[in-house]
Length: 409
Picture 1 (cartoon, rainbow, N blue to C red):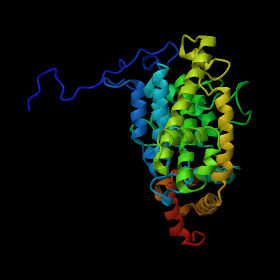
Picture 2: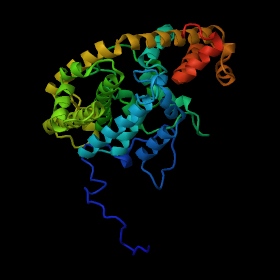
Picture 3: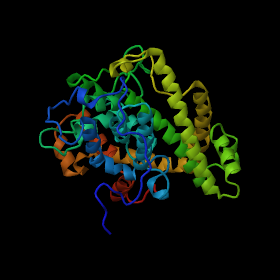
Picture 4: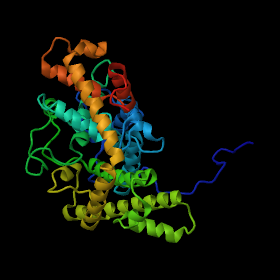
């Protein structure tokens, strides 16, 4: 079949013009504050597109496929992993960014990178590493993400890390808000990795991040609350009747049952979750528009120096979300089946750390040679970096190689 020039095989419905003009408060790739190590610009990609592509090609990003959200990765093929969660966050972040006329590529990049520093076994692994590293500057998954992006990824000849733009690193470090000053949530010592990097590359730790970073942070909230409900229902950690009585998801389930009478339980769950994600996104867009109207920012830095975050949920949605989070915490994250998996995970991570720290000759050569002969703090950080980079299944394999199946039955 011959297709005439200018003709298409299938008609495509006309959508909005793309790319849309950016709002005055959006981050602009051509105005980026640049990279720590200067590089020639790409002829084909903006600076933020290039950042996103480097994250996608990173080894740490591929490892997210086998890192836990709530369930240990071998417990089922259909539960979320860090990778699928990151992709869902990226989708929601792009939707919010597009509606607000922000730079979608920066928002997507931050969504894809935000969980790179998580160790195996979700928050359980992080809790154990915090305990093990308490005498040695501690452990924080955001700081570990920064270490990965600026030190531990080794794919380039001229620099360690990925040499990402200031805006991407700022968004990764501050996606939950300012780290220092009056607006900081916690007046605690900053992780050493953040302090060390900021001395060379000032990330304005006292301000809010870009609106793209704020959108990615809210997208994270939307994604994990909804997929935890989805996974919890499908895993049987709580029942349909319980879910019907919950804020937000209960209303969505009732709407789905009214619209799709006779639909299967799985379809009703999927429709309710989709409905709720849409409702939460609409709430964020309305609330963000309201906040932006108050200060009318004319530059990205006006968002950074605003007296509060510009992107967020309404007070009513926050109240409903608090009720949903409380239910999930008690009935899902503390479910006895999850607690049993957490117990095994604690044993694995603690045993690996103790062995590698006390007997560094058991570390793989590339890790041992990098830190051989240095002090305890550097050795502890090497062990921590090695374990934090593990997937769930690799950590379990290492444990079995060193300790057998003891404690895993």
